[in-house]
Length: 353
Image (cartoon, rainbow, N blue to C red; front, side, top):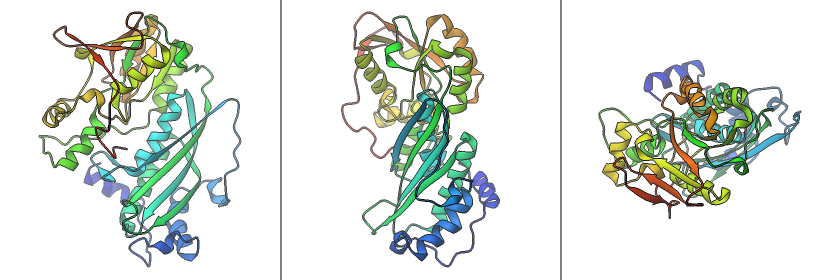
């Protein structure tokens, strides 16, 4: 996020005047300091009819079949080009629900804060959470805040859980994948992971590499409206990247997958950063990209629809499900060579989300 955007956001949601500048152990005690922290920040910024009840939990009315997901976020650094841990925590769980074919509705939000975190940093994270919730169309309805001693955490960790009604036309399941299905990636890969690594390694490029963190639920809902059960699987290639996710699908669905290197979209700066650091972009994390397995008969039309969406303007068909080499992913290089693609064997980029 640019400095000008941060300034506008902070002007719209100015931090209240407080009698403390940093968060201490007392703010996690459950007493007066906790109430000051929550009342002056969380409850005011994220106010809604359910959260305002300030009960031990949330009373929800949900219709039909629902999806539920949870995720924890411990990214380092907590502020990075294109976002921060707050919006990442919202978008991450919203997207997990979207990949289920659900319409995200409510979130829980829990903080584990290291004592010494500046209140200005916490406020910026809260404002980002508010904005991300508004953009995704979800509400925070319950949560928790704990504070740990200095040195027992790393500024702040966040957990979000989410719930949403299933889209009436969704039937997302690996069992639906069939030979001939086309595999479509919604945008440039590896941007998030390389945005984090460029900060950690102090790399400078002609233009700053930005994380792709974004909510994808409106995009997937529109696609489900139009193509319904012809969408066999949706999944987001976060940790482990595109390669790991495709290998996992090949194993679980007992199918072969053939992908084409020349069709895989990647920003030129990101590709350069990967080459400089000796990283394969297929294994680098994404936070605003998803993979779709769709019937071949709708693939071109699906791609055209996706490319009209802001989250899909760089979308490409990158591969096909095949009967040959079951449980294997084969990458065909730009010059026609072929190699087996396996899961990420270890931790390529720690603390990436």
